[in-house]
Length: 419
Image 1 (cartoon, rainbow, N blue to C red):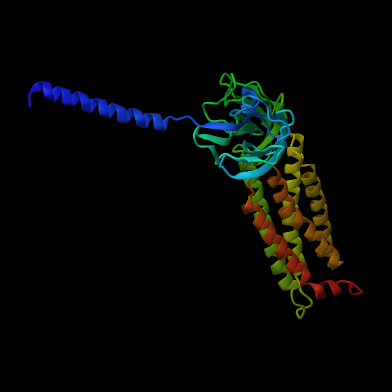
Image 2: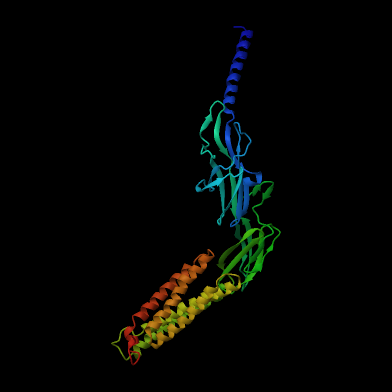
């Protein structure tokens, strides 16, 4: 076979390949037609970004986009709208009337989330249902329904700790970073506006003190006083059009810790010494050797004193935090009341009178040191100090055990037995 024949065959083969390839491309790019289209009424309705708790107004329009009524509005039809979250889970289905063809509805969320609103089918006045999967006109590859979704982001502020300085007695200095919680690191394009993840120009207060934004956008710094071994900080972030957020932090105040540690250690040693002294003295001076558990009321009183002091401590925590914009006035009040009840229980236990009153008095600090403290800390999402709460619970139970098992001691302490 000569060269000319080879070239001719190669040319014919190339034409055949191009013809087949063109046929495949034509088949792949064949455009679908849709009789009904439901889409956001404008570009600004396709993506809405706002604060949690705010009301979003979503607008859609229903149009005939194929057939004899092409480009006309679909009036008085019913559209089913599917609402799904960022994970694709359907959270709700809405049924809306198209009215004149363009229709609106309101929706809100109290939680940070991005919801997608997707029209899934349309029912016209004659009862005909237009869905996305039914092929109506196969010759023109025409389906019944298509739609474009709208998305709404309900966002909030996120506050994180950047740095803290606890090296000064009675003072703590902190810096926090404020961002939008849901936004990706590179921000979000909303129409023609780009929203940065960093929150700049916000009104930020730390423990009631107005924080200053540093040279780094979104970083705010302030100082606050504290005399406790644990610093409690509440950061409030406010901005026009946005719901104010409250974020709390707790951490050890290093400069304050030594004096509290020495105080607790000294009180513990002193309390243990008093218990030992009472035990040995009672062994020598007891005039009723047949009476068992004669020291139980005293032991109960000492343990009740410890739990009462713990209640007073939490009352002081609540008082200082309330002065620093925490909503802990109830914690402060309960702490003081619990301490007073504890003192009353201590007196009655040492006098070995009114056993029922002593038992009631020890229940109040027990409730305060466990339920009251946990509820107050949970209010701001703070970690519970179980190394304090659990020992307090154990000491209260032991105090209750000693006082409750002193019936004979209380009855023999007066002229008349207690009922």
